[in-house]
Image (cartoon, rainbow, N blue to C red; front, side):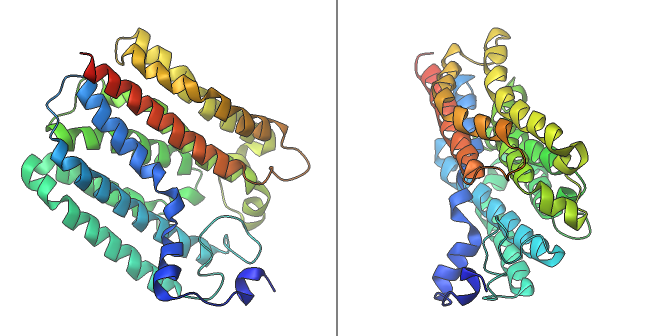
Length: 307
């Protein structure tokens, strides 16, 4: 029996905190900060008092998505005794899938409450962005959609936790899409998608056994390596392109200071062979996304300050 099964059940607060997977919150915080920083660097009038609400709404949508993902993965057998990923609360038997789904819809509702002042200030376009984000969060793994299981997970993560979250945050803060904001979201989109591509490379054997379609299971291990490396390299490569195209300030190149952090995950995914992907590679990719995103936003913030 696994350690999770024999572990004593924690108190309700600690158990639900574990279910939320708070360690993953930078994946939603970084796009919001990136959108705010880009709006400021573009000279847009930013309502900074709204930023805490934008962050809260974005994190609550992320929480809801995590919970739906936990319940759906458990139902499909993806999360099981000894598997990596997920919060583990369902595998341990601490809660039921129904309780997790209920908690997910509570989180969706709280996100709507947090976004209400933003909606009143910005109108129906922000409503459309919020509804798209909520539907996308559910459809990622929730039935009957399950986009993650149909080799659409990487595209979904890039679009919703990359471009839409960056551009939507900018819209919420300044009431319009600053010119170039969709393009400026691309580096963040690449790296948040990289977290999933590396995760799917790690889980390629389990997913193939369960008949789950991901880019890794479709292209095989060799193709999975190419996809993972391309996502990480794409984040760095897109920044100078944005600079040379006049979309982003040269200060955005501050993100390249995080290149040393990219070496361990790149080396791990490239060297993945007969043995499973090195433990901690997904976590190191998530850490890279966080530090890259913070540096990218910091560079854009400096550009705004020296305008």
